[in-house]
View (cartoon, chains in turn green, purple):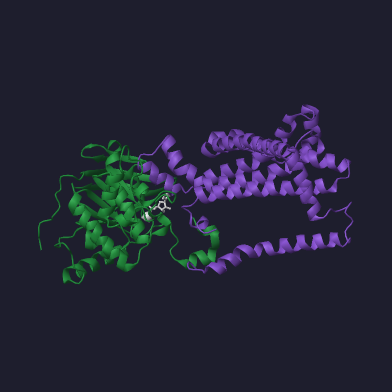
Length: 270
Length: 261
Ligand SMILES: Nc1ncnc2c1ncn2[C@@H]1O[C@H](COP(=O)(O)OP(=O)(O)O)[C@@H](O)[C@H]1O
Ligand SMILES: [Mg+2]
């Protein structure tokens, strides 16, 4: 059960989110949320759609500012650690007018070609270096986005449903790839996913966000690589899934399609 | 699709030319048979002949060059101003607030309505023609630059910012390439429009250029030269469209829509 992790937890950042709140207008999305990530830890965030997972990630990435509270990395204000943080989105966000290689080298000074080829080799795409992003499959594009993040040797990797749009087989390949690079580089990972199985397969801890706070903080103590078929895996997955389903829908979103159909656009935002 | 045979490809290239070729042949036959009065419409052969004479005397090249330079200079001035204004209003909210509604108001003036005023201001000077061409080409480039910049995928901009791109690198690597398809549409529009405006300007008042060639020939009832001038305008317009398309294919080759056009 308690097999030691292969991770060398020195490269990763220790992240501390303290009493962070975020309001959009009247609506409070995050309410005094506290979250700690150890160095090199892999944490998955789950929760109902619209519960504020992306908002939390964007706050940590510095793409948005919190209404109150602080975020520190290794005890220093996180704003100073932006260069050590990389984020991946559901869409790969590759620049379509740059080749795969140029995308990986985006924003790098000096002679970055060799490093970019290395990063591509790490995700198994070096032979596609000269292609346009439009010529790749969805899974390949996400791998390029991963290479683009890796080349900066990040200490914190933020993943916002990066596999949400991929087919089941490609997802499993991507799980293996993400686990491998995480174990090799030892960065800290915060992964948002709507797939509880994915969370259990990859994370050291699975965290549920509900009502703007942490509703469940579940350690996953299963040896890696994890086999989905095992009894413990299935039990844990079911436990978390039931907990997610028990959360009421966030008050802002319509409780079902009926409401939308009957009241039309007028009630949409109520 | 990829391995289309050579003869099929040949047929594909030839077919669009069949109808124009038939029209020219019918026109020549009708002229030779005396069915068309050559004072109203010269035969294709006569037009070619007129072209040869003017080419040999050197007159043709002089007028062609002058018209070409006028169109390009006018386009460069108008397109340049349009691009600069579009960049300002596209990139900055304050620039948009200060300038966009003014430009939109001026845009509603049809350039040809300005002709009397332009003649009053500039006489039949070179600057009158340049002004008219520049005025007409400014707006297509402006509008398409502005909209091109505004429609750049915000997700890409956010991604680039989170990778530390700011200022000039952000503009060069993300915003400009993202706006380029739209800007090039504006350029193509503007080039087409430049020729139309130049024709009018040169026909009304000029002592050189293809428009002058046509007006002058009209006074001496040289219909062959008149038709030749019209065809020259068509050729020049077509040539600038081809150049604009080549630019699109070169600069937008990353875009699947432009790879096999
Ligand atoms: N920029 C914004 N302006 C207003 N409301 C926003 C903004 N971003 C997110 N929200 C709202 O915040 C809530 C949480 O969104 P998000 O964090 O994207 O949820 P998810 O958990 O699905 O990723 C949603 O109700 C969304 O409508
Ligand atoms: Mg989200």
